[in-house]
Length: 150
Image 1 (spheres, one colour):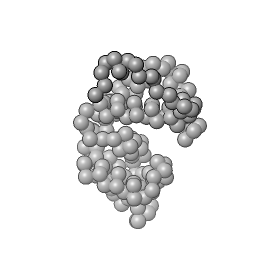
Image 2: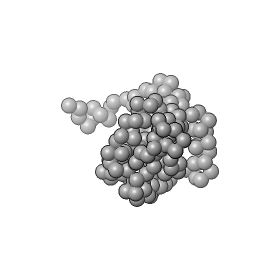
Image 3: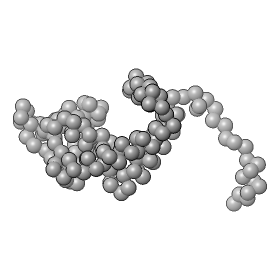
Image 4: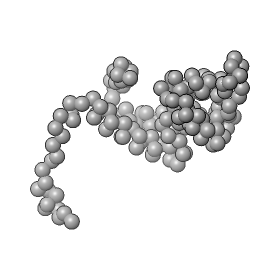
């Protein structure tokens, strides 16, 4: 067990070339954002990825699972698992796709729409909190730069 005096004498860790890596800073920022998101959801049992799926379905009612996977760059089995979970929670409903009998058209259930609106309010407050040290121009620039990487 380290004593107070031992802790004070320990040298600060070296980070080598990590501070020069975009990925290193993205990961640290992602961890901070994820922790705040989890706190903002306060037991809502929703992940950032699941919230993103709800947002896409809300903005694109009737979206097929295949198209959702393309947008999110996810394989079919991952999309099916995500939709299964959201459907089990009563948030998403699958309907026959009007143009493809083999596909499902996704939509938020009535409960899902109500729940999404509530979660979206929390996410907006979360976004305000995580970007509080950025000006509006800096926030816009950060988003633009990140879009160029992805």
